[in-house]
Length: 533
Image 1: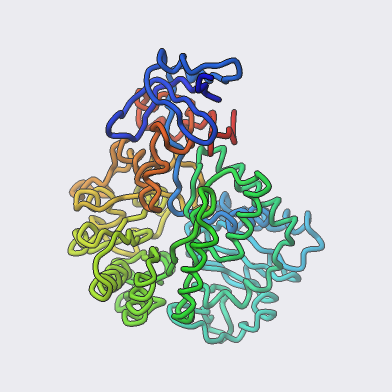
Image 2: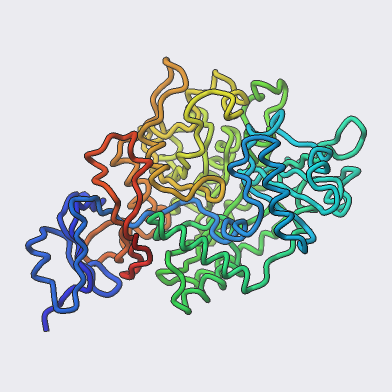
């Protein structure tokens, strides 16, 4: 019997395969790619039950790999107050009151997505929140998840109205009256009020997760690196896989905190033996080295430009992180480190170097996540240590204005080493891209648009803009490499897993400015069409 294809897609194919960069057709049988090549040759694989999708010259790509994603966390947030569009205090008030009126029985009102620049003086007070909601606890989170604001009932119920010990690199901001102002910087400060928010029950959690998965499929995402994982999340994703409801692949690092016992890393290593399939995989650890520039909690090598004498702080001392890195590396685990400031990036690299010195070199593919600021001396260390630079194009301000406080915080003298995508690539680093959803939109095409159209913030600065091919590789093949899966996915090549996305345009023939408007028409994961416009 001829080896007929289940599906054939005709399109302008970007394969991400250096041996065959372009093609006219991709044929799929089962979960794998059967053929990539000419349309005429593909036609010989058409049987009586083969479905042919005519892309009419549009672009077909490998399925997008989002290398920094919060799948469950972002999905659960979809059931709360959505504040991403709030443009000021009036918008905020209207959105919160509408949600409160529609949910009169909720004991706690959580909201997510606030942009600092939308707030008066980049912050909120408990009195302003009391005026919006005086009776029920109201807890609002910044879009980056590193700052929260709470009204008086929430602060009182959380036991921090009179302040408290927030731990390293966190702050319960105190107002002149001696009481908490309402601003809470970093999890150590806002955890007492965050834990007040009821967890959704299993049915609600799964319903929200399905919404998050559906949005990812709509954006052409077929793999995510889930950045806030634990054994419970992996079990949830595996249960959805068993039900046939998991529509993307999840690589799930396990969170590690400064108070995590060193011996607990072995438990994370053991998860590799439980979750090692093509849809749900373990084998890595996630550390938070510092916070964010916006709240002065990112660790810089020198003081903030608008806060003299303060370089920020870190969650891990150099010695503590080195001990974690050496042990994790000894166990064969991949290490992923949230590091925003140049001081945090250096501390992460120092830890990776300590691990190599202690355990010897190996193909570890350790990663630094975000790298919003880097010192030029640390650029060549990525290639030298085999460390991956994992960055998010939509995190970079596109211009310097009042819409984002980031450039002002670090100061003009450091702009040239801010979001240094091209500099890292030139230094030999493997560069992968993601969204950090729900911090920004899941839209990969918006991320690609930002990567290829970015301009320097000042005329004399180096250009960090990416070519279209570079951006595509950072969302496909290199994303697969960052999770040790480049032999399985990230390319359209015979024998590879059948993950692909058909776009609404030929992206190689439109102006770069139009990329943000391109949308997926069809998404296939594991040989199954999971989205079709």
